[in-house]
Length: 189
Image 1 (cartoon, helix red, strand yellow):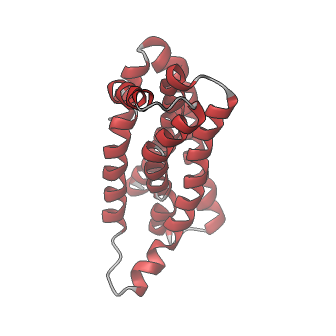
Image 2: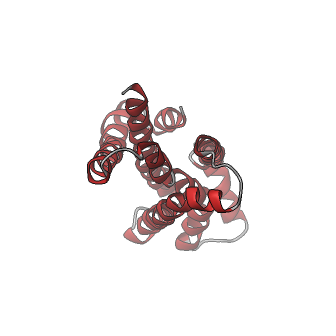
C-alpha cells in the first residue's frame, strides 16, 4: 500500500510540475513576447505535443528494453528523465536566464515574437515535457496485477489532480503571494 501511495504521489507531482512549468513559461515570456494568443498557443503546443509523444514512448519503453536484451530498469529511466528535465527546466524557467536569452535574441536582431517564443519553447520546454510525460506509462508497469480500468482511472485522477494543483495553486497562491521567481524555485524542488 505504501508503494502505491508513493507511486501516486510521483504521478501527482509530475502533473503539477508540467502544468505549473507551462504557466510559469507563459508568465515569464510575456514581457518579451507579449500575451497574445499566438505566443501563448506556441507554449501550450510545446507542452501538449511532447506530452502526447512522451506518453506513447513511455508506454513502449518496457517492450523496447526487453527486445534489446537489456534488463529493463524503469526506476533508472524515471530518475534519468527527472534529472534531465530538471537540468533543462531550471535555467529555462529562471528569470535571469530568460532575460539573458531574450535580450540575446533581440541583440541579434530577432524581433519576431512568434519566432522568439518558438525558439524558447523548443529549447526549454519540449524535451523536459517529453521526458516527464513518460512518468505515467512507466509507473503503470508497477501496477501489473491491478485491474486495468481501475488503475488507469486512479492514475489519470492523480495526474489530473496534479495538473489542477499546478494550475490553481501555483498561480492563485504561490505566484500571487510569493512571486513568479519564488514559484519557479518551488517548482524545481
